[in-house]
Length: 299
Image (cartoon, rainbow, N blue to C red; front, side, top):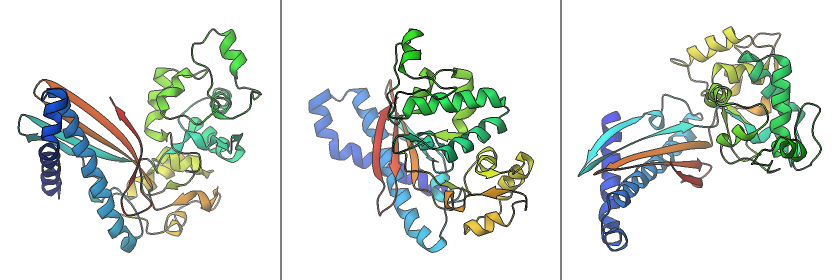
């Protein structure tokens, strides 16, 4: 399957170059950078194709998991004067930062989940609460700071250059401007969080990290969550009930926030042509035949 996937990337990339070759020549003089961008875009189109095909199969299997073709990372594959590579990362297994608010108002249920995630990552409860409130204030629509939060007045007095947008964030990198956040803390959080539309509240228990599982299931010890996560190497949850059967009787959870399906994916295309390199990331939403592009970023 890996060989087939690599071949598909090369085929898509070559087709893109052939189709747009004349346009690139006229607009950029066949610059290396322009060619690299076409290659990277070809890798993204490949990702959409893979996810579209996977959805057809998922209608039968009923779940998404790391054993599927979309989870295969494609290594650098030679294409003419360069190479192309890419991967697809599931975002539905991560805590959505933007779900801290519901219609612009703080959501206490998801705040509690995020608080547990931070404490699972060994944050002190007080520090965790301060960050929960600060991020909530950053994205909620009002200007009234929470007890441990910070609104525009605080950032103005602290002479910060970036003010709270009072709107959902687009990238988790934006969190570096939030009171209390540092590069080190963000790197610790990065594998477990994402920035999706606020309505994205469910997690895929087949792809969520042990830390995220322990956050969504109250009183689930991290060691037990890790055992469940490790079991997914040979076990795929076909339904949420198969996951909840493994939970301690003392635990509690909101079943409506748990799923075995994934809807959001981050596709990354990397390309080199001559001396130029390009990285392209695209957030995809898959709820139909072909995933929709929600945002596109050149790195």
